[in-house]
Length: 372
Image (cartoon, rainbow, N blue to C red):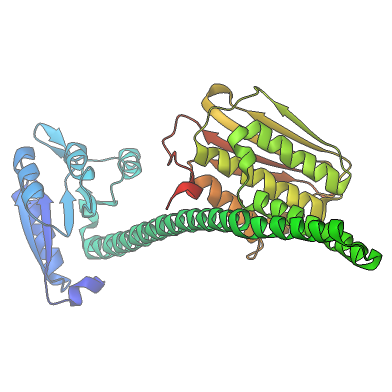
């Protein structure tokens, strides 16, 4: 069988590590008779072999197993450390099957006994096909890794942009909308106090109450967009989240912390806060629990946040849904600070969301919302 590459215009460059001129000539003649376009070069010293493989390009290496002062494994050890090294085939009459199998476990492409020399073209063709398939797979894996890196960078940029936009909107609500609503409420209250018309006073009081409601709503929205409570520390911020969850849902939410203060970069604290916020939102929407437990720890150089409930749990298929963007967003958010997220759940037995972030890592220590 003639290798597919033999049909190419360029002949194969083959390096033959062999100390017997007769055996080398037999191998070269066998390849010529098969119609394989190739140049076969013989070398019998390890130093010369190393020089040639360092400076030249070969498509195939054939090697006898035992040579004066060294073996083919010494030659293979030199070639194996090179990137994109060619297939290495043992062509020997002095190697047992066990030794040949051990060599292949080390990465040697194949082996052939000299008594079966007529199969050499087929063995070369097969080795080249496997080699090309392996190279294509390595290239595909490298491209996939590059794509995943670009996706992670984009996710990090997106999360940073979202936090910056949230901070900008929160500032506008505080400076413009909140201030305007407060001023209008004072004016409405003034009108009510200075009016002698009972109907007007009633409308003024009603308007003032509605304005107060709007002010509280704007403050709540601002807190969700850019929680100033984080300035008091992560523990206080998570306790505030839990209290709000408990007030809205009526479900007890207990917070336990290894210390009152977590010494972590602002960016890490924000990721932990957003993770707790998203977990509690999902619990309120879907879990129907009787209680929620939140644990914070910064022991052994790792910030750990666990949000656990005893609700209905998550169907495992839901975790792999293509459009489960909330859960995927938590994973990507954790990666932006060098952390990871684990979600474990059993239907009917609750869900646990665990965020772990090494505090010794060197993620961006700035708060994304502080960026210009």
